[in-house]
Each structure stands twice: as C-alpha cells, then as structure tokens.
Length: 125
Image (cartoon, rainbow, N blue to C red; front, side, top):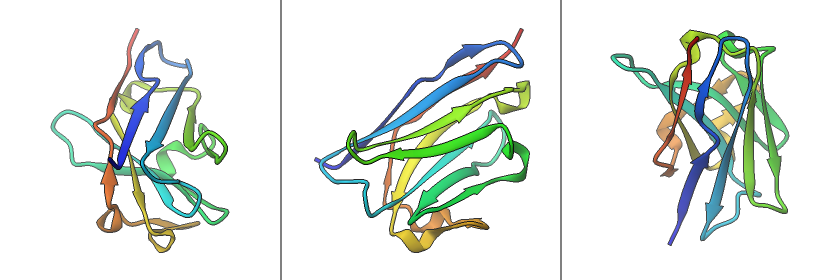
C-alpha cells in the first residue's frame, strides 16, 4: 500500500521550532518531488515548500525560517520550522509528485499523486 505519513506537529509558542517529517511506505521518495502544504481554518490550501532533484522552493512567508531536506536512507522528507508565528498555525500535509512539479520558483499541487492525512501545528502563547 502506497502511503505518506506526517508527524511532528504540536503546540508551540511563538518563536519556537518544530520539525515535521513525511515518511513514505510502499514506494521510494528518491525520485519524487515532495511538497509540504498547509491549510488554516477558513483558508485555502497553500503550498509551503518542496524539494526535487536538488531544487528547493519556499513560499515567501516562510523563507529564512523553514528548511526542507530529504533523507533517502530513511525514505523521509523533513520540514524544519523555526521562528514560528501564529499565522503558521495550520494542518500541514506532505504530498508526492513527479519531479517536474517542483522547482526553485514553483510548486504545483495539481501534480501531487499521493497525500498524507496531515499533522496539526498550533502556534500560540
């Protein structure tokens, strides 16, 4: 069974950090583009970051605060989130797609074939 599972969400104070992981089973992430998306209550889903063939993308609102990385040996992709703000509060999802759907300046959700169920990140004092 092909599956993506997110973990690492939780409650953190503003300025704090969280590390989200996206683990794959049933397929390898080596040759996939992996994207992180988020959806806050009452808002549309937003592409946050992606990694593919050495390229990484970040939406402007997280640049300098979030870092995406891949561990092929563990078949996981990690999103390190620092200096968190209340506006980062959302359910975060990872998704996998062919490499062409992620570049250094774009992330295309239309190409995402597999999605995880999400992990909740709450930034609040």
